[in-house]
Each structure stands twice: as C-alpha cells, then as structure tokens.
Image (cartoon, rainbow, N blue to C red; front, side, top):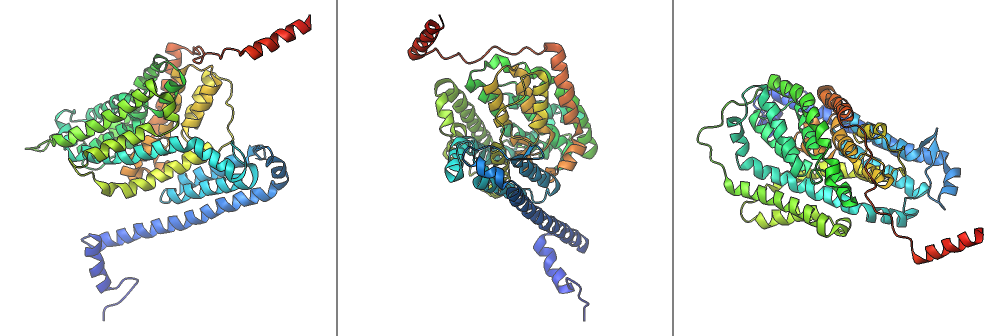
Length: 499
C-alpha cells in the first residue's frame, strides 16, 4: 500500500497534468509558491483588519474633537498628524509589504478612510453621505478616464503583440546592451506624443519579445521611467501636463522638462540596459519568414490617433467638456469597438487587468480624500520634494494644488510630478499598467533594490536642469477677473468715506 502524506501517489499523478507541470519537483515548487501566497494573503487580511481597527481606535480617541468637526469639516490630528494621513500611510505600508495581496490592502484602506470620514470629519464638499457623493461627483471623471485607459490600452498592447512587430524589433536593435538602451529611448519618444500608459505597455510588449520573456525588474522600472520622462515635457504625454494645458499654461512652458528627461534617460537607461543584458541578452535576429499582420497595426494606430485627436480637440475647442465626461477614455473604447469586427480583441486579458486597475483607482481615491489644501511656498525646493511625494501620493491632486497656488516654473513641476512617480511601481499609472503585465514587479523592495538608478536619475537630472536653466517662475497663466460694477461702486464709496 502506497504511503500517503499530505498528497498521496495517486493524487500526485492527477495533480501533475492538471497543473501543466512535468515533474514532482515542479509540482512541489508550485504548491510551495501557492502556500506562500496563501500565507501572505492571510497575513495581509489580518493587516487589513488592523487598518480598520486603527481607524476606529483613532475615532474613539478623537471623538471630542470630531463633535466640533462635523459642523465644519476639519482634519483631526494625532501627534500633529491628520488621522487621514495615518490611515493612508498604513495602506501604503501594507501595499509595500504584502505585494501578493495589494488589491485587498488597497480596498481595505479605502474603506477605512471612507468610513472614518463619514463618521467623523466629513469631506471637502460636506459631511456624511452628501459630502461623499459630492466628492465622487468631483473625482469621477479622473477615475473613469484612468479606468478606461488602463483597460483599453491592455487590449491595445495585445493587438500590438499579435501584429508581430515586436518580433521584428531585433532586426533594428543593436545586439548587445545598447539594444536595451535604444528600446528605452523608443519608449520615451513614443510617450512624448502618446499617453504614458500606452507607451509603457508597448515597451513592455517589445521587451517581452526581444528578451525571450525574461525581463529584469530593474529594466521594468526603467521602462516606466522612460514613459514618464518622455511625457513630462509634452502636454499630450501625461495627465498632469494635460491638466496644466487645460488650466492655461503654455505648452512651451513645460517643454523645458525634456532637458532633465534627456539627462535622466542616460543615467537610468544605461545601468538598466546592462542589468537586462546580464539577465537575458537581446535576441540577435528576427525569426525567418516573419509576416507582419498589418491589419492589427492599423487597429493599434487608429486607437492611438483617436486618443490623441480627442485629447487635442477637446482641449482646444471644448475644455469644459473634459471636466464633465471622460473624453479620452470613451474615445479609446469607441475605437476598440469599431475595430472589433476586423480583429477580435483579446478579451481574456481584462480580468487580470481589472484587478490592477481597481487597485490603482483605490489608491487614487484614497489620496483624493487627504486633507491637502495648500502646498509650501512655490520654489525649486518644493518642486523637487513633490517628485518624491508623487512616488506614493497621486500626482493629480498635487498638480491641481500647484496650479491653484501659482508661482512655479512649470517645466520643473511637470518633470517632478511626472517622473517622480517612477521611483515606486504604484507611483504612476504607467507603473501599475506594466505591473499588470509583469506581476513580479509588484514588490516595492525589489523595485527599489533593482531600480535604484531611477531615483538617482531623478535627483541628478533635476539638479542639472536647475544648473542649466535656472529657476524662473512663469508669469500668471490666468487673467485676473475684471471687477464688477458693484465692486467698483463700493470701492468708490469707501474711498470717499476715507476723505
């Protein structure tokens, strides 16, 4: 009689073909990995409960202050820190530590913050559920655009992969580490006129092919950095620069961010390309008899053109519309459905992409609830610091506050909030999108350890731009409103009364 452990002989025989493994050793590794993930999820679940417990614990401690706050929503402080930030910090800590359960931690953090504000402090738009609904009405366009773009560009990247253009890339790239560097430059150039999410996914698709499916985490960080660097100086390359354009900042004002971006790509690009070459060298030759599927190339091009055109046309002719509906995201999905009869999109990628998308939206929503009403005085030091903050805090509300405050050199700010998010995988939408394609990148520790060159590149390139261009705050980009006749009359009465 065969001896039986946790899994007997017959069980092994049924387990191996079911899981697609060919040896007992591989099965043991598969089960061990699954057990490790289950253990991590269990720990993450307890951590998530701890976040909720912390929320209510802090609520009980701060009840006296909360009673006064409900009439006039104000943050409640513990040791000089708003409780909202404590909860958000715990959420980010959980995401960093429990990278196998990032979605659960992010959703629990969002729930804890929402419950806390519902019960105690209220929102920017009021208290209770009316305040929450007002907040959602203010944020829903940004959230909907992110959702549509992340989901839509995942389908676009599969069209691009199936077109077989990535398989053709070795024919044009150098055979050594310089091939990886050139690929990063291509990603940066693409991002200068496309959304950085699309650029990162296209870069990730090309890297998967030319590096035989083995892409180093340091190189993944570099792909995200390249997509964010390329979009930092273009008003159509990143959400934050588009916000500046909508608000009245001249496209020429943000163009100087390319100075820092050009320096940065050499600083992070060369080490990352060498990391990748050592890990898995580039394929030297394209497959023989390769046939490009030009119809899929047309579909990819059409989706991208529609995205760019909708962005530009709406900004130039209907700027108010951008605050009312997710124009760019809807345009992308219209193009996807229109071209679906030509080639079926790979709908199978959407369930996994959906998880990553909800994760990002949970963090963005949590960040939008933070009581950040002002920034430090506008200076190059403030802009420099915002780059580090944007690695863990959504750069969209940061940009909105900076635009409201004024007094910045917009090229510096565009580079800081755009490129700074590359330092951690969830610091930018491009990083989250690429991590959906490469789940192994969802580890803050590995990202920082192997992508160290991104943070170094940010510091050096920012200082180089400061030395070369100097800090020159741009003139106010909004015209002051003309005083009303009533205000003029009141001012005249006051002046007459003074004499």
